[in-house]
Image (cartoon, rainbow, N blue to C red; front, side, top):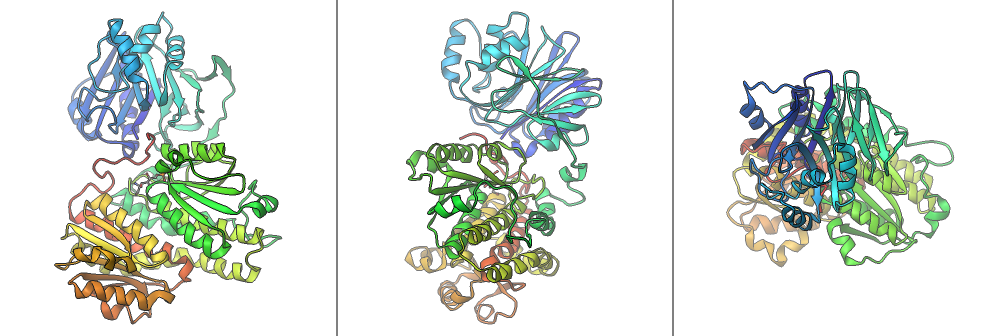
Amino acid sequence: MCGIAGYIGEKQALPFLISGLKKLEYRGYDSAGIAIYNEGRIEVRRQVGKIAELERSIRGQVIEGTQGIAHTRWATHGMPSNRNSHPHRDSDGHIAVVHNGIIENYLELRNELEDKGYTFTSETDTEVVPNLIAEYFEGNLLEAVEKAKARLRGSYAAVCMSQQDPDYLVGIRQDSPLIVGYGKDGNYFASDIPALIGHVDRYTVLKNGETAVIDRDGVTIYVDGKAVEPEVMELTMDIDAAEKGGYDHFMLKEIIEQPRALKECLSGRIAYGKRVIDLGELKLDAAKAEKINKIVMVACGTAYHACYVGRYVYEKLLRIPVEVEIASEFRYRDPILDEHTLTIVVSQSGETADTLAALAEAKRKGSHILAITNVWESSIAREAHDVIYTRAGIEIAVASTKAYTTQILAIYLFGLYMAELKGKMIRREIQTIINELYRLPEKVQQIIDDNLDIIKEMADEIAEFEDAFFIGRDLDYVVAREGALKLKEISYIHAEAYAAGELKHGTLALIVDRVPVICLCTQRNLEEKMVSNIKEAQTRNGQIFSICFEGDTLVPAVSEHVCYLPKTLDLLAPILTVIPLQLIAYYASVKRGADVDKPRNLAKSVTVE
Ligand code: M6R
């Protein structure tokens, strides 16, 4: 949700600012801009559209300078346009700011500043920030930023520079991520690690309320005006992690990476000592687990769908009631939780504002919080009592794929861990599931290797329609929801998922004219029921695309297109079933000429409520 980059050092700033923005483009791509300081002047260039448009608009221009800031936007306040693009400057043009987040009291501040004679040229909330800094500016940018910061309400990560007090950049952070990078020939700001790979070997994740000053010689972090020792981490990822590596799209690369991501997620987590599942130093020990009588799972989008898998799995394994909540609804509903409730928040980025707010609400009510996230030291990881990292590796495509399957795997592992702690399963039962978990990476690989032709055929057919329906029962229904989200998100085909038994209560009215009905059929005890539901759709002229296990004969007999999956336990099927659904969405999007990695109106990491 908006990407920020900043650089000050020995090299020209422009190349890093553009390359850094490109690595952050998944965070927003409505417009982009840069501000570079040189010889007493800040040069600003802004352009509506993707970063390629900005590049085109400045081609051939000489924009020199060894310090600058840059931004790629996901519009909240003010439609995408040149004048609403960042960087924004104060009325006199001597302070430039890039910002990610929402300044909630911007109208009040804007009125106050307008009364004092400041003029505004955009509809954004951000423009109050440079003007407020200008209001407090008495020759020292850092002091002015600190004073302005005290007046801001809402969420922000912002980087500021001044042409009257140049030679350093100031970054501030509250509830939106901002990272400081330490390079050999300069220092950096970025919203996320991919922008920094190849430029720095160490970094610090700014904490809420901290201010960072970077100059050509170093980095200083301040808390309440006092310099503090930052926590500095090694950046060990190589450039391949943030590149397409020969694939046409990040989404395809990330789908293909799933066998490896699943292996990483499993690695070292199965022990053979006292306990079978080793999830590190979780504070949720046997004594605490004993008292847990309810689990609440909270997340958004794809992570929310992973939670739904959790609900079905935990209720089966643990026999504890599980509630699943959309994070943006959760905190405003005054949810009923206490110290006997375990709240599990799931988030790829670890920065989703709604999920973070839900976490805070559950914590306030005394619930123990477990985070399942992909991003080390993210806000959600820091705020939770316990964390399980999914270890999927950087996920860049807006459509989440490997994050989802590793979230589900982490959910299984935690379920088995709890089953062990609470004595709900015997070791042999746990071991049977674990043995099969170990086989999942190679089975995912098998689906990718053996089924691409049939999946592409299915996608080509589905891409011809404007509507599609996904149906399934039990865990298949839950995965159907993720399949529908994936398809609509990147191909713009209207897609809905239904519990198969529910079709006849209304939606069957829409099953006409060969509309695609994608049927997930991996829950063996419900197979005959599924076959009946498929027949109901087929009889109404729906076109049946089925996904079932190898060896199944009932489902293929009532289907026009079939994708066979290697067999696994019904309980673990979601990790396999979703793979063809991800690929169908991918190839349908390609066929329809959509921008797969950057679907319209969306952004990867949603850091506003
Ligand atoms: O980073 P998070 O997992 O918290 O993000 C949650 C959703 O925004 C995300 O899963 C979104 O639904 C994806 N674009 C779906 O592909």
